[in-house]
Structures are given as C-alpha cells and as structure tokens.
Image (tube, rainbow, N blue to C red; front, side, top):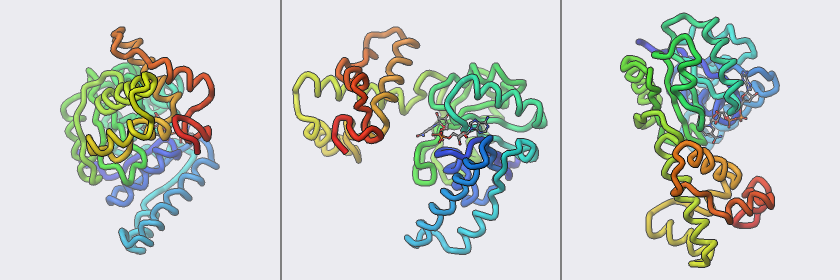
Length: 282
Ligand code: NAD
C-alpha cells in the first residue's frame, strides 16, 4: 500500500509531535482534535519546534515552511477520509478510544489502516472493537516524537502481515527505527524500564545508597543518559506506580510488587517535576 496521507487524531503532546515528524518527512498530514483551542495549540507547538530546528541549522527555512504547509488541522473528522493510515493519539482512556475507533469505522474506507499510540491499552482488545481488526496496529512513539528515534510497532493477535509491513515501512520513511513487538502490557520498553525504576526505589528505600549515587551509578555504569530516579521524576511517580499496578494485575507475579516507598511518595503528592517535588526537589 502506498501511504502518503497520514491522519493524526489528537493535537496534544504526542499528536502534534507525530504530525510534525510526518510533515518533515514529506507526508501530507491531517491532524484532528475535538477541541479547536487544542488544534491551535498543536499547530503553534509544531511551528515553534520547527523554528527552533531552523535556529539550530538543523532545518532550512524553506523546509520548515513546506512542512507546515503539509499539515491540515481541523476539528472535523471528515477531513481524515483520504488518509491511508490514521494514527490515534487522543487522551489515554479506553472508552474514548473505543468511541473514536467506532467513528473511524463509519467514516474510513475498509482498506484504510488504523494505528493507536496508546501506552497501556491492549492492542488486541482495541482491534477487536473495530471492524478492521487485521488492519489495526499499535504505533507507540516516544516523547518528544521529533527527537526520539524509536517506534514500537505492536501487533495485536489479529494484525495481518500486510498491515505490519506497510506500517513498518512507513516508520522507516519517517526516519524512525521501528521494533516489532507482540501485544502485552508495557510492550517492550516500558516492561523493562518501569520495573527497573521500581527497583531503584527499593535500593533507595533500603538505604543502600543516596538518590544521587544511585543515579550516578546507573548513568556511569550502564551508560544511561539519565538515572532511574531522575527519570521517574520526569515520567511522574504516579504514572510509574500505575504502570506497576497494571503488571501486578496482568501477570500476578510478585516480581512486579510496587516499592512501598514509591507508593508512599505518591500518597504524599510527591509526583516528580510536575508537582515540584519527587525524589528530588524542583
Ligand atoms: P495530551 O493530553 O497531550 O493530548 C490528547 C489530545 O487528545 C488533547 O488535545 C485532546 O483534546 C484530544 N482529544 C480528546 N478526545 C478526543 C477526540 N474524541 N477526538 C480527537 N481528539 C481528542 O495527551 P498525549 O500525552 O499526547 O497522549 C496521547 C496518547 O499518546 C495517549 O494514548 C498516551 O498514552 C500516548 N502516549 C503518550 C506519551 C507521552 O509521553 N505523553 C508517550 C507515548 C504514548
């Protein structure tokens, strides 16, 4: 399938990042949100991000203008009908995503591929809620999308090889490095990352080392760009805890036991950067 027009649903953090990356790579983009103010903020965010790239000499002014011209933003779902691939990046809420997928089934031709950027909802379950389960797939981008090279391509049980191959090729054209993953809670990266962060909280709680030394150890000893505790503050301690609880529920395996210190800090409202205090103070 020749993919040239990409629909993006949601103009928030991820949606506008995906729209930008697609437009810079030469795709035509239709970005749709329910909220007009969100559409405008999304476009302003893309414009500011492209301008920063121009100032850093990473993009020409002409390429910036051309990319912006390739993005059509709207509050009308009908604008999506000519896309060959629609990537859903709306708020993380299963009921909402199901509603959006039902709307897309009504609107889009049967051959159109649909992807979701969900971080935590089962791709197999969402596929089963559509009329195109074999043409449905997960595309899990990382934030900030224009900078991060990885896309996890998640196959639901029903995803066809043709859908996988077309979306994989599209991600490569986007300049990303895709990895192919079977559907399971946390996919690959968060399945490994979040339990590692949880373990860092156990090490901290046991008083084995200070937070600074734990982070320095993982940065210098494992070549990680940021220590696990500083990263937890960026992700949000509440988000890390919620993800551990998903694994507890899914796998009923005690290795996913959330660290009591992590739970205690979340209960205190020490959620990380967003609340001004987490492991560190901001
Ligand atoms: P966000 O809150 O920044 O943006 C969500 C947008 O969806 C909002 O602009 C909202 O108005 C819009 N929206 C809500 N209902 C809609 C509807 N019915 N139709 C169209 N638009 C609608 O959220 P985000 O951080 O961009 O996350 C979006 C998705 O990406 C979620 O599924 C999330 O799990 C996933 N994700 C997020 C990150 C991250 O780091 N933020 C990383 C990977 C994946």
